[in-house]
Image 1 (spheres, rainbow, N blue to C red):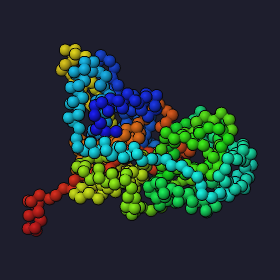
Image 2: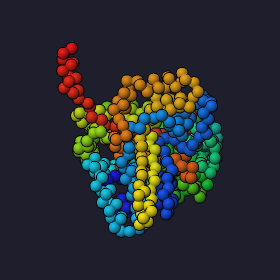
Image 3: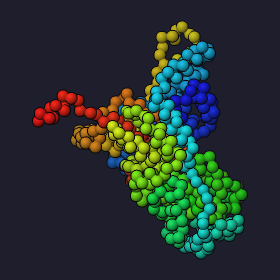
Image 4: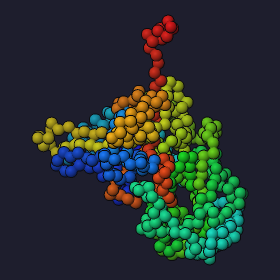
Length: 520
């Protein structure tokens, strides 16, 4: 969502329900108290949950994921590289009900409309294209496959066919003898067992096998529906659920190169569509499949009776090439290219999907946008993990003369969040001067020199807040604070971050510098 008219934004805001976890988190710090100016607290949008204790006297040796979490709590010293205009406009329209007089509201809305830039109008068009895309696809397998389970107590060798006979005996056997499943807690970066979060069982890949023909068919289905199309398919686990089973909303644990999750149903006797991916719901019927990007929120709703089981496969990027995007000449791709070709640098564009630290290649529509921007002349295009600090202060607009001199204030500051920036900010808490010197030197490497051309005046945009930013709040725990099936704090890439594409004009040497170069 971006650059909508006042009426559209007003309508959109009222449609959002505070009971929606992600929406509630985005609103929790922007609503002022009535009658008094109030500083709306700050929210962090990136890959980090709640605050951790800050001890300036000691700098413990932390696993990479935990270090990222610590720095997100206090990212001191990072350079401000821009501001998010979309977030600023959203915050301003979020206070429209403060205008009790219609003429004041009309004046306010006209002022906001005058601030809309051509880039913002183009981002609005881009948002519509994104909305027409899909992060989840489903279908049926073309052929039956032979499943062999060797996990103790679950020994099964059976052909899984597309049929309504849902293998009740097999499902019960798999559930009764498989291992209790845990979940990855983002806050502590630990794998925990807590039935209030997840009540399920699982069989690891060492306890089952599938034929190569199924792997090839899965690869084919993915390639026809997703970007990137060239993937490596790896069996992961069999997930089983029984009466009372559920898994709260979560995103699958990230990893470099991981681009998707592919689920193949083994049977479902629950009578319900318990897998919820975005706005879609699915059964685990034998021979049916569901695939989605790993950062797509999904959950398994409470099961009252029966059993369900799926085989989960992880999809890894096998290679990257412009041709796989160039080959996709559908109408959505053409519209994206037409839209971004008109955008004027400098600007930053928040991406739809979340990615881990070190990401170099994108997925889905993000990949098409990135490829399209790279085709433009006279600009440099960069990928950057970012963190955004936003908040607001405003007064009531009830006509009180004593408040006429008070100014409304909104901010949405954007900062870079590369590995070097994490190390630098972390070192500022250290008492060791050598740590600080090394970290400062890391920020001055040639690979980051382009960031010095940026300042707080560079505008950033996103196509949809709910789909783009990750905002943590201690008040909302269900959707965000659970990563997936496990936590791996020793990996830097085990936490999702918000990413942006940054587009900057290429500086042309001035006449005097060109003359000097020639004379030498």
